[in-house]
Image 1 (cartoon, rainbow, N blue to C red):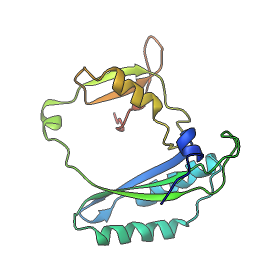
Image 2 (tube, helix red, strand yellow):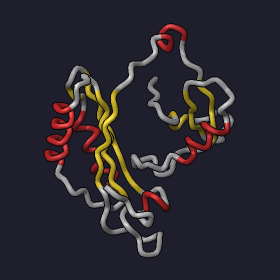
Image 3 (spheres, rainbow, N blue to C red):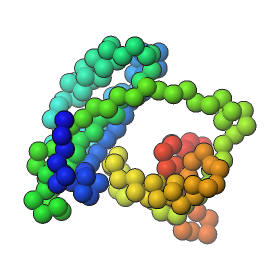
Image 4 (cartoon, rainbow, N blue to C red):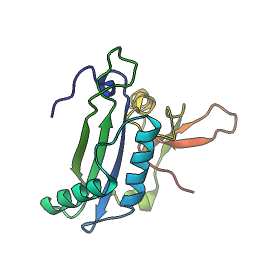
Length: 171
C-alpha cells in the first residue's frame, strides 16, 4: 500500500486509529474499541470503508494466520489527499497493522513505576487520533530521566491528569 505525501495523515497528522489485543487467542472488548474507532472517524468526518462486522472478520482472520497467541491489531484510517493541505481529503486509506504482544515486565508490579508529568493535553481528546505530537515531544524532552511513562497534565496548581503518553491511567 502507498500513501500519498499529500494525505492529511502525513502532512497534518489528521487520521484516526484504535486497537484491540488478543488474550489467549481471543479479543477482549473488541466491540468497544471498534465502536470508538467509528466514533472517532465520525467526529473527524472520515468515511470508514468497512462495516463493524467486516472489521471483526478481518481481526479474526489476522488472528488465525498468526502463530503467536497474543497480538495487537491497530486499525488506522487516514485523512485522505487534500487539495490545499487543510480541507478534508479524498481517497482515505484504511490499514490494519499487526504486532506481537510483549509481556509486561513483572518488576512493574513488584517495585512500581515512575511517572513524570508534562503540561499539555492531547489535541481532540474525544478522538483517538494519531496526533501524539505532545507525547513525542515530552518523551524526547525528558529522555535522560528514568520513567515508565509521562502523565499529561494541565497547568493548574493542583494539576488534573489527562492521560498517559502511551498508557491508560486508572485509579
